[in-house]
Image (cartoon, rainbow, N blue to C red; front, side, top):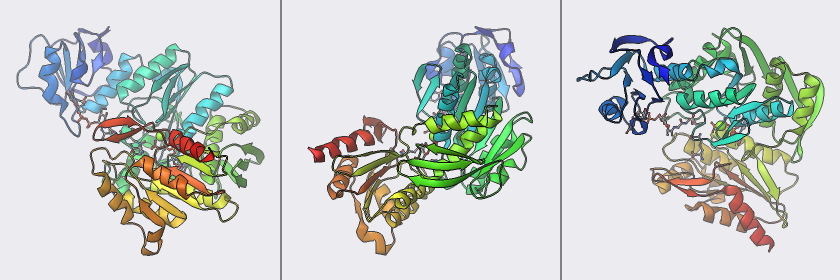
Length: 487
Ligand SMILES: CC(=O)N[C@H]1[C@@H](OP(=O)(O)OP(=O)(O)OC[C@H]2O[C@@H](n3ccc(=O)[nH]c3=O)[C@H](O)[C@@H]2O)O[C@H](CO)[C@@H](O)[C@@H]1O[C@H](C)C(=O)N[C@@H](C)C(=O)N[C@H](CCC(=O)O)C(=O)O
Ligand SMILES: Nc1ncnc2c1ncn2[C@@H]1O[C@H](COP(=O)(O)OP(=O)(O)OP(=O)(O)O)[C@@H](O)[C@H]1O
Ligand SMILES: N[C@H](CCC[C@H](N)C(=O)O)C(=O)O
Ligand SMILES: [Mg+2]
């Protein structure tokens, strides 16, 4: 139970109707979850306007309503608080409700188009190995001490973030590593959090359905760095052409990492093989199990953060050499028949290009690279032809297939992917609507030595069609099928 007046600190309030000396049980932004004596915050969403549910919330027992516009008829037993921005109010109220947990541990946010899950997961594991208690908020999973929760978003809503951080504080967590998505920043899910540092990975084509232009997408990412305090660090990939921009208006201390230019944290790839990367990081050599030059960037970011948080460089490098691949990111195995299967979450043009270039660079002979890939429904349509073109340019054979069509017609998505294939590459491609059949086709095409890349779903264990998620796991499927070939 909390007194309303105690959780309004720092909220931009325009008007109050009723008493703020009211005790509330919980904060909710979904009217369907309201119980008696709760506080309901009405948010304007993309589908609904939460203000329409104020009466329902009161019927279910809400005693306090936070909204941008007062409803026409006010109930005298209810307190109404009019705020400038409901999303921001939710984030600040959530933080106050949970006693500002982000200030009680060291919170590091990682943003950028690709690499967030990899970097946060590696940092979590490195700090655990170094003897600290660490927390993780990522696309794949949420870890609060020893308890694991399922992740629904890359960056959860602000109420969930603060509740997880509160649990972490209770569990004695020292460091929390979290992914900060552009949707998260834009919807103010991270507002009011006290970060000790922020990391920028890279910025390439994604989410241009949500952010109408690339500049808008970039400026949303930049605003995360603009809002860091001067005590925090801002660590950016300076090889990325937007790295410098992220630092333009930040008050935080500026640091950089790079493979190609001068930087505070600098790496050189000495060897890049299927068995891993051999790197020189700030003049010290280290072997890692991770594969591909994009992972050299990820590992460098991990090293940089470890240094900025005070680990000794030799200890950090030793621990880096022990880090395991992140689930669904370049996960691979070789079947008895000698076919290599790679499962990777590449769902953007840049990620797909990086993964295929990595495969092409480290394959030893004329083995075929057979790619199975699709694009999500209800997501950025502009990336579909680009991914179709990249897959067909960099593979020997490509099978386009479904990847969470959601509410869209799966065939239309495939047509849009195929539209990007250049005429000379068309004969290499095939479209198989059903993902299981597509993977089966790849295994039939593959001969000893060949490489099958299954891209786009990584760790996901479902296929979403028209709001229904059915179990589907690329790793499980390909390992069953390749075993069938062995048998
Ligand atoms: C596009 C987007 O980000 N949508 C998010 C947004 O939903 P929305 O704006 O559509 O909300 P809405 O359904 O219109 O509802 C508006 C308000 O009315 C309330 N409501 C609604 C119905 C009702 O009966 N009662 C009620 O009170 C809702 O609780 C909400 O407060 O706010 C919701 C609540 O926080 C989120 O769950 C939802 O994420 C959807 C499911 C989603 O798919 N988001 C993806 C695109 C996303 O956020 N992705 C990013 C990046 C992914 C990456 O890593 O690349 C992520 O961080 O995961
Ligand atoms: N530093 C990087 N640069 C470019 N591509 C990368 C990088 N790291 C990983 N990738 C590619 O992007 C895919 C997604 O990586 P990861 O899950 O770490 O990114 P993310 O930023 O968390 O993505 P999401 O936005 O879905 O949360 C990987 O499977 C790999 O193909
Ligand atoms: N976080 C990303 C993941 C995309 C993964 C891909 N499998 C898809 O469903 O489009 C998104 O929600 O856009
Ligand atoms: Mg992620």
